[in-house]
Amino acid sequence: MRAAVIVFPGSNCDRDVAVALEQASGRPPKMVWHKDAVLPALDLIVLPGGFSYGDYLRSGAMAARSPVLAAVVASAKRGVPVLGICNGFQVLTECGLLPGVLMPNAGLRFVCRDVFLKVETTDSAFTLGYTEGNVVRLPVAHGDGNYFADTEILDRLEGEGRVAFRYVDSEGCRSVGANPNGSMNDIAGVLSESRTVLGLMPHPERLADSRLGGDDGRVMFDALAALETT
Image 1 (cartoon, one colour):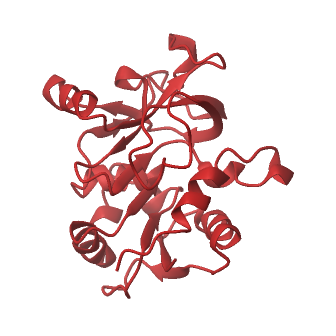
Image 2: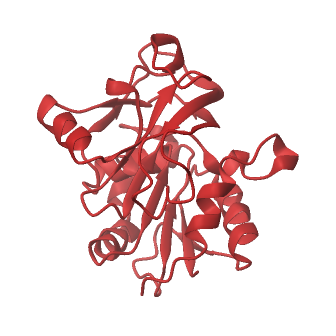
């Protein structure tokens, strides 16, 4: 698998993602600076978590205008899988690759803790390693993770099975307490129409090694390691 991690000023999970990708595939990803306007042939692009441009203006808005994003969007439209984690999810909505927006958390406080997620679909390269309906544990760390979309978009996401992960409790039940940010429909991750772009607020790279306290995130990277799309 030929992967690239896009690095912005303020990225803080780029190296974590790189380690997870190399552990899964045996091949280090390319670290691509945000000012690079050309991407090599790739099987996967990852927009990592962090605080690109210090989250000034609006989370992900400035990063979405970086020179490299034109190449990312073009690659995505050709079918290259793109994974946006946390701030990367925000960037994906800002550049139009995913619908909806990420707003400030309902409690207006930064949230940093483990959450439980229900796997809602295995029909994507990102989720095929999981079992539909399973509950996994991943960390969140964000201030703007409140997913919002209008009723028409939500109905389409639900009807087309494009909600990839949903916040639940440890037993797999939806509740206000299980949702860390107020996201509509308890949405934690959504897929594009082509199912080749995933935006995910929790961090799979932070629980991709049992030595770090868990490996539920490793499942995603192991599945992606088999990608050969170009």
